[in-house]
Image: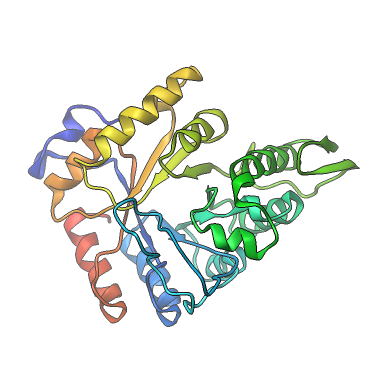
Length: 296
């Protein structure tokens, strides 16, 4: 959390809050232009959500107040690490993140290689948001039991971290087992790219506390996130960590610098904004927000 001076409103507020943006709700034809505009305007990071497949029968939602999925099954999908690697070649500074990658749906060899590749081709700009996933029918479509998704994620993440950091790795677990392997080259960022866990369940918070460098939330306000962060702090303290030890990332909005100061005051360190109503207005919206936030 910032100092008291950093939390003051108005012209006295000197922002240390990181500002990113997400391309998840855009038509794909806008992805590249928005990425280039975000870097040009001084945004710190660009985030892209992912799914492996959308079954025709979908149910549930990542938003607790919604009964229905926020996206239709015909929504275009891309391999998130392939697309972010493409954007890495078109940019030079902006960090590139997943919000969030369903790591447990993949064998850890595949996931670890995808993360390593993005980190290398981007020159160390990868930010890895992971989650267990809310779409149970997606898990069933791949032949996996959705009831195992949390355990699979934990085991796959533990294996990936070993592959990124150790010379020789062998493993025998509940879901994965293999004799000694080598994994080269290692990612640019050491010990590995930052891992941010999405979700607000008790299990997700324990996962943050035990395995991650950050937590990723969606759809909050400075007021609604406070009780969530109070619960996260309890989970962190159980592992001898505190909220100040991690990145607190959330999707949200801000109309002025006073509201940006409120985000920072409650403990958010990175705010991911989408300041537009339609994709055709995205670049102009990014420019207006950047001017308000004085990103450059």
